[in-house]
Image (cartoon, rainbow over all chains, first blue to last red; front, side, top):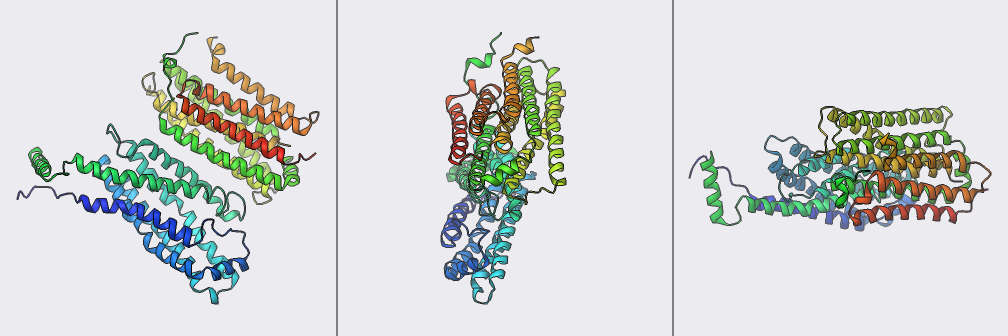
Length: 258
Length: 192
Length: 91
């Protein structure tokens, strides 16, 4: 074995990590949205007493939904790692944007896990909490998860810039997905208004800040997942690693090139 | 009048991605316009009273400013198509200064409202007024930064008839900012 | 002055004039509220369409893109006018 042979790329692990994207978005749709009764989310102008009743009535489904989401949320980090690796192929090893994407995806998990933990605790402790306490904690979750948008924005911007720079005739991630990333970032900024409104489009359950900002991001995650899964397959073929004989040829030529 | 060679084939100015962005952004504003109209039905009297505290002179002059800015950008793209390299930076600078004038006028207008004790929290009309014009103003500020970068690039001669994708993409964005204000202004200031 | 005969310049002059009409003409009280308002909405729609076709060069764009953006104008104008008519004008 030649000692200068580069470490083999673990395509199977890479593909597995790319598939954690769909696990994240399907899991959240079912567990947070459907089981956790967040389609639509309980409105910001709901009275404290009604909020208490909501958690009392839905105690078990919310506890299951939120606790599963706290676990599944980590898939956003592993998915981010897969995206980062694809970006590195375009950016080169010294690229900074791949790091920003990876870190952005990882930190995005933090507000998600904290907010879901808070909503879980409300359901868990509903019998000893006052309605005002329920309302406060419910708001706390929303403020944390929504106002953390900028860290996710950095992740999305970094990915968009790098994939737009892809020189391939058919880019790994098409330009429209990158531009949809910019659309997502633009839709996030009005989220800064949520502390100030309990009704209207800019409340956290409102037309804009829920029904536009979240689906826009969701579409980005779904489309990015699809193209990252495809990209890993394409890179594997580009590397000639799809068949074992091609691998030998490829690594031989790599060594020869040194 | 000479026909531009670009006319011969159907083409979208700039990169296609910027049109994805522009269309999505326009749809966001469309949703906000509809939200405003829905709320206006529920609180008609309040909206009408509050509307009268807005000065349409500001809105009208701001429309004229943005239209003129857009026109300068159209002329800049046209100058690039005709390789009149020396004219491009002047036109881009003029367009950018119009954007700044819009910002100053908005600052004076906001200042007057805040001095009169009117804030976004006063009522739902002012919530819409400050949020919609504020989100639009962010677009204007972003556009001014973009036009400044373009002005510097144009001074270095980076735009000509063969290198104008970036300029055209930016122009498309800037016209959208103009276009959104054309609807936003009557919606907030003039409907009665 | 070739500048003044360019189509874009003529469009710009028209847009400026239309803005003056809506801002300082139609907003006056001699027009009834609904006539003035509907004219203002219609003029805004025409202005937006001119910006799309002439400034954003959609005249020469591939048809699907042009239709998409023209549809936006139609839907938004229709929605604003529809909601306006749905609400009883405040006299």
